[in-house]
Image (cartoon, rainbow, N blue to C red; front, side, top):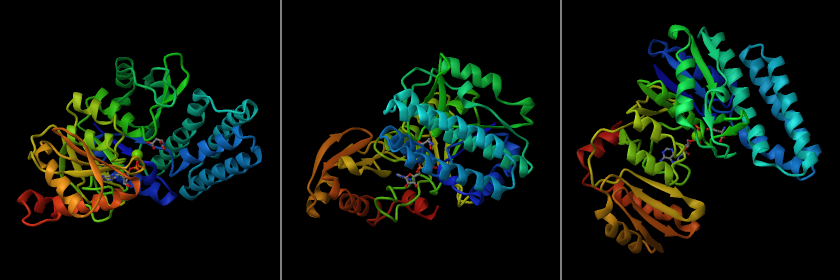
Length: 383
Ligand code: ADP
Ligand code: ASP
Ligand code: MG
């Protein structure tokens, strides 16, 4: 079996969902289980609605809630699926939570989780119906009944023994003839209260499920070709990495590469399940493979950034001897950045937030674009 996780950016419209359905259909021979994030920016929109309600602006909260409901109904209509009653029932339930927030005047962490959970509850319902419409025998599973966590609301930690036992009982479905579809990110504490795994946590759900059933592969489908040598929101022109190790991927995610939730790698690595990053808008691209395979050491693989914190990090196995080269390149370019940490996997610089883009530019030119290029780099560039 394989796990196919589709992020919000891969589900932002009816046509994007149709594209996803075609990708799943094309993978039926590998027996997929599908994990979905909320559609587009739904989670942010839900949390804004809750904030307006908490601040006493019930009118704006109501207006935004109606717009969100209309958008979901419109996507369902464009897909030609009949789930209006289920969508409306979910929005009725959500209205109850928003009223509770309005009367309390604040959002408790458990209410935050309840409100945030609607994104994945809605998207999993819609994607299941869209898959069936495409001829995929999809079966909806409620992730809140499978992923068990502690009670640390908004950033709950999964209890893996309980979670894996439940997942193994539920998946595969009916001798693998059915394709399970479930929302990522959402879970429940042991007492049944809804929890969530932290922002971007659908990747983590996919990894937990893949590890539980010892899947052949966990595929993270997103809006970029794979792990790039730099964050495309900070600097364009990054190269797509063909393969990286679990440790490198984990380090990149922890240091700001949003393409993976930082906790995603650990469950996959423990069970030695390969993780792939793939582009749902460019499915013929091979993407980035993440495994335990030995890799070339002493080579920079990517620059991870946390612009708000002014942090810029060069990541790669055995990268530490390059600290002074990186420091010198930044100094030559007149960028003030302090070398704050050097380890086997990272060289971390601290700068002012406004210097991050130029620091990335300098380091990218120094470590990824300077001749002579090694055969490995040429292969990566050609991929
Ligand atoms: P999804 O909706 O699929 O979960 P995310 O927005 O969470 O997508 O993650 C994908 C985004 O991660 C990309 O669009 C890109 O802007 C960002 N990103 C940050 N660093 C990297 C990197 N090194 N390689 C690829 N993408 C990155
Ligand atoms: N929908 C959640 C979020 O926006 C989880 C995810 O997208 O992975 O944070
Ligand atoms: Mg994401």
